[in-house]
Image 1 (spheres, rainbow, N blue to C red):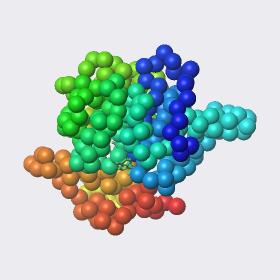
Image 2: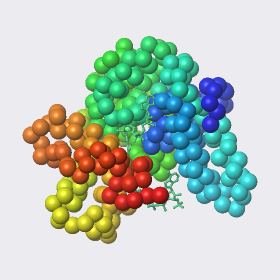
Image 3: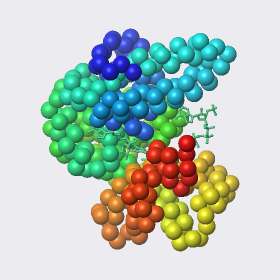
Length: 305
Ligand SMILES: C[C@H](O)CC(=O)SCCNC(=O)CCNC(=O)[C@H](O)C(C)(C)COP(=O)(O)OP(=O)(O)OC[C@H]1O[C@@H](n2cnc3c(N)ncnc32)[C@H](O)[C@@H]1OP(=O)(O)O
Ligand SMILES: NC(=O)c1ccc[n+]([C@@H]2O[C@H](COP(=O)([O-])OP(=O)(O)OC[C@H]3O[C@@H](n4cnc5c(N)ncnc54)[C@H](O)[C@@H]3O)[C@@H](O)[C@H]2O)c1
């Protein structure tokens, strides 16, 4: 990843309305979104809070691309290496939000799940980005309408909700608000298809489709551990072997990140206090307080090295 924002003309995506994509936040999700966009031929800029965070994103992307490259070029390590380098060369890093959106056709926000922090960011972005730029949030649970309310481009604003790990998960939820124009929705939808995802259309309802079903399931599994109904390991084995899920719910909660799940549940509990599905869980409180955020911090229900 180059640390200087420098655009080059991409011929492979000339027919596509969206060529230049800026991703704000290069964490778990942002780095995956940057990777798949670059793999599809987009010029990508990742914005992070400092150069260490950019370096971490770059390392994560390189590791993930190596796995993809090995599969694509099984018999030719040189081609695999070139593949990784070619995709990485399309990704730039920046710590300057304003200059990083100057040429953007699309900005995808993937920062912390907190309305105030997202509002502060989008106010800045709205002033800095050209009129044509479409804004999208990768929020897991917040209202896209509410996030967009601080901008003057509510018609050019929607949700693009990816799944973790982005390079492997095929789904993209494309969310439109009452204000999202047809043109914006179609551009987001076509971009989703161009980067290889299967898109579904969602209204701006809490959790869209997947998280409205998944988060209460994860939360109930955590409460089962709290109640001592079964161990984390046994619950995970049960759901893998008894329900055919690729990961058990506690493994998956570690994978998603306990800070993210806690933000989602807290937000919904505040908005819908009578819904028992959104009641806070003691284990999540404790994990987040202790910095045990799951796989990304090295520990959650399980330990990772
Ligand atoms: C909360 C949010 O808003 C919404 C969400 O994101 S909810 C979370 C949604 N995600 C899920 O439910 C994930 C469920 N888990 C899975 O689908 C699978 O366990 C998994 C794809 C993550 C990993 O698969 P698994 O078989 O367990 O492990 P592993 O053998 O390491 O990987 C399988 C393949 O994926 C590839 N892979 C896994 N992660 C990868 C990554 N980050 N980059 C590139 N390739 C990757 C591996 O190279 C491997 O490829 P191969 O089979 O061709 O060799
Ligand atoms: N974790 C998941 O499984 C998942 C899945 C889908 C959607 N989401 C959503 O995606 C968003 C990001 O989640 P994540 O898991 O990638 O979080 P993360 O903590 O891994 O990454 C967030 C990144 O944003 C950076 N950041 C924070 N403020 C910033 C700013 N003002 N400018 C630039 N960078 C900034 C942080 O340094 C961090 O690296 C959240 O809204 C979350 O709800 C998460």
